[in-house]
Length: 80
Image 1 (tube, helix red, strand yellow):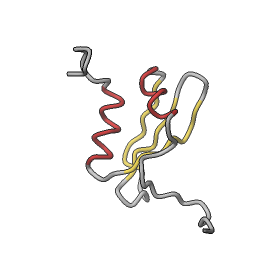
Image 2 (cartoon, helix red, strand yellow):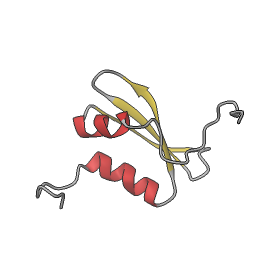
Image 3 (cartoon, one colour):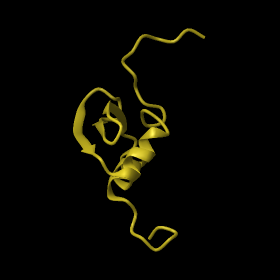
Image 4 (cartoon, one colour):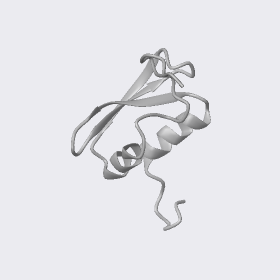
């Protein structure tokens, strides 16, 4: 259970489990009140599922970052 005795938010828990198993996710659409998250394979190449929700806890969780840590990004390489 969460620290305040509520069950963990199922959407946030799903993304955390996804990351814990080495898979990646990325926000693909966002409005002021909702998000759509692409859930991808470990190499980031194949979308396995898509989660769209207006759940405030999920929106807050993904507002902290656009993708899972270490996510594959098909954009141009960054220069260092």
